[in-house]
View 1 (cartoon, one colour):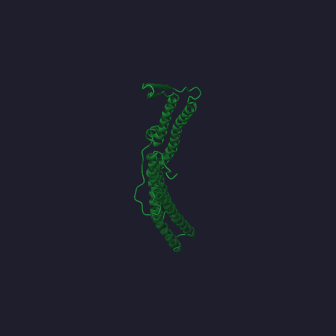
View 2 (cartoon, rainbow, N blue to C red):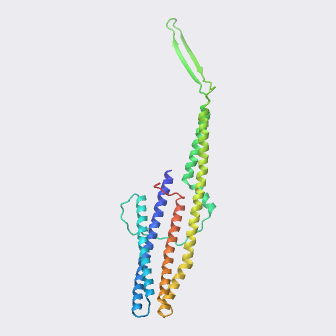
View 3 (cartoon, rainbow, N blue to C red):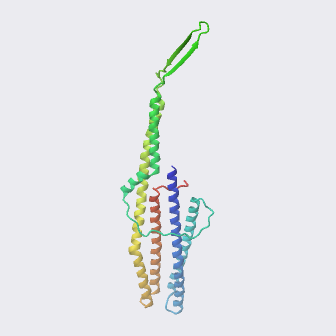
Length: 296
């Protein structure tokens, strides 16, 4: 039970840390892109004054700036919430927020359901605790079985007769006959305890499999997202932004097209960070043998 609690603490600390780190990275991305969006608004006004742009371009640039400011605020609130949870778990609720240092995973190896489940069965402290209850129940059954066997009592006495001066000894043997009470009640209770303990082992095994199925699904989804964003989406979004800005400078694309490309690049980076956070949280769950919620 102590070992299980250690794993819960470790898992919760790691998961809240990665959530806070991801929020910190999203906030940094939003603040960085906010400068770009502000510059975009300025350029839109300059183009409008120079009769090269239009009022819809200005409005679109202002909408984008407001959305980015909102994302930055949301990321700040996410960071503060994750930080509060993290400090509560480690027992330092009054610790002031500070910059976190760490990296989010950019790739991960595939996991196989059945082999991971077998590893869990061999390492889970929850299951070991359930097996201990079965062993204790077996020991209680053996004790109750022998409890019905009556004990043989023997008594030895030595005496002196003052009238005759004789010495004599006596031996007395006794054994109770369990005619009505053969410890049936305790034996039934012991077997019931054993049945409950064996079913508890099965319950823990099924609980591990159910939690593993959910964790495997979340891990696979996060891993697939990280791989796709790293290999396909981010490079294309970056190339699209570069080409759009080049074409805009050459007079081939209007300013609205550049805004769309910038927002696509920004959104792709935000989603990539979130996928990395989901992958890190899933990895922490596996490392913690699917044990979490220590404060519960």
